[in-house]
Image 1 (cartoon, rainbow, N blue to C red):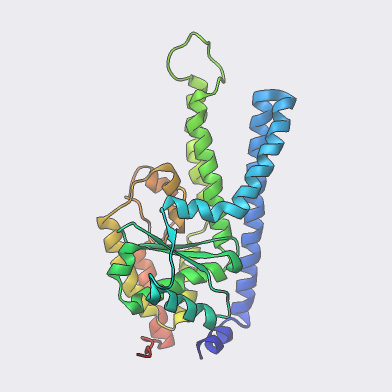
Image 2 (image 1 turned 30 degrees about the vertical axis):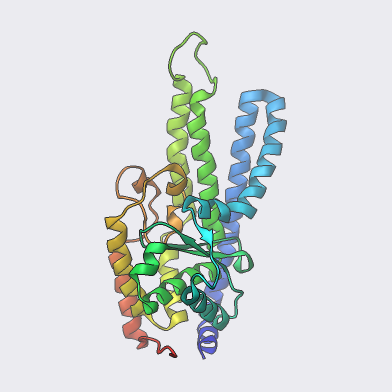
Length: 314
């Protein structure tokens, strides 16, 4: 049984690595929320003194709560993903239910984005509140075996507990980007008679914009994709299926890049493949390792373990 195989894999050194990985992600989440609080308090005191500080305390509590409990909704909204029923996507439900059951984990919520670009991502604060989303494009491009490999990868993000840090980082970066965009309207110096943007506000916007990218870069290691590839391939017992899927996804994503708007750019790191065109703002937010290296490692894993395609019951 796959469940026995998966549990056997997650023992000894592997289990210790899994626990340490989850613990580190919890610390990163706390650090990000602390950073968000400190920034809001500092800006509140700078703009409004003690009165602004009180307002900032209330605002920081609201944003911290929202980032923790609703960060998954922000990511889903950025891809215009909607919840789907088993009647609409029976094959998708079957794959997810099979893998979740064999791993001994709860069934996540399933969403589908109308985007024709082939891609997928997972979000949520823990396995009990997780969501897996795929695009219409990926359901049309991949065969069942390859889609199963992708779902195994996304479920591994859930089980590795790295979707919380990813989702909170996306929410935090989005908030910083929003502040940067609004900074142009803040009276942070200059006279009332001046026409055009306030120089101090423009400077603040130039500083906060790249800071949003830095938050994501510091919070999310590219190794999380390698980890999800490896553990997902172990869960499905089919590394070559994921390798084949990644080749198709990379080609499709390059042919149909999504627009690098603020909300999507700060959530792009959640995707199995970078959905944005390279260069410009997209390069600032890129956290994906080279696809060729991911595929090479999967082929190496298949050669070492001797695993191949899973035979499905018809």
